[in-house]
Image: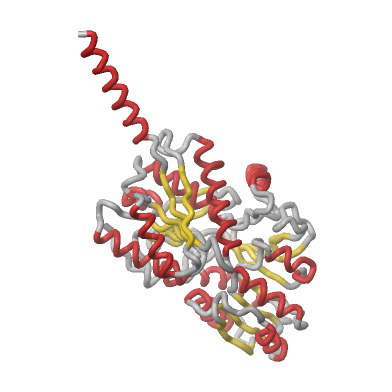
Length: 414
């Protein structure tokens, strides 16, 4: 009798331990972005921002569903769509149900198509795509799908805000547009032409060209053409090493006007420009650090810098991804039923750590939020980038930018 009771107790304890382990299994998020090659610094800093946000905002507060922790797993895609699809399959094979990616809309287009196809074929093993920085407008328009959520403002939304500023600057008569030769670069150019024609038809587009992404080592020929064109301002969507090398070459070749950018900050870019970027570089983005929104946000930045002294909190939207996903999982009551999690994300309104609200627009899964125009400077900088003393300070803001903008998304829901 005693033996039977003992075995039953052991069996019960074993089952309890197994149930507890299953209950406490981590919610894994695959981070698929460049961790090697010319854009590695951007990808690695993004990975660190995800890891820190997961730990500080979710795990330190008890996790989700009463105890499950977020675990960020890095997958190096080498900025290649083909490699990204390989890494996606590796992640799926490991049982990962959430994929975060942001660097390169070309990669994002490949991932969203593959995830849509996978989910249609594997209804019991579906995956959600958390797009935190790939801003090709098509992703939430003609190429939208139920499994894709974009937490960044798209290229059109950002260009709308940026050209509002340019439109009231009477000194701008000629504009040169230059970008990387892929979907995002083309989207930026198209939006720039469209919005400038609508707001300032008197402005002359004196150049509109694309260059190979990640392959140009010397931008001097491009810079000389820009200077020779007589342009008063430059617009570029370049990011990573392409942003740094293009911007430095333009300035070194004598250009003195404003350079309007999407990604001219952090990851070594701010330190490299230093004093030369002051009065020149402008950035359209979200999540201001200068001025900071609250004491809570300030403490978050300080804690991140304490853990990653050489890192930057340069993509505020990453905290929105983590907090909104955690809330959606708790609201859905499950981390494995991604349909329920997706439905909880749709239409969610979230008070961002960085101030303002985020609305995940249900009809196209495009985040609507405040968009700001920043200036590169060392004045009134509470939180700098690259430990350089220089940072980005808000010059103007658009509240809930493009909230009423139309979408061509025709989403099929499961």
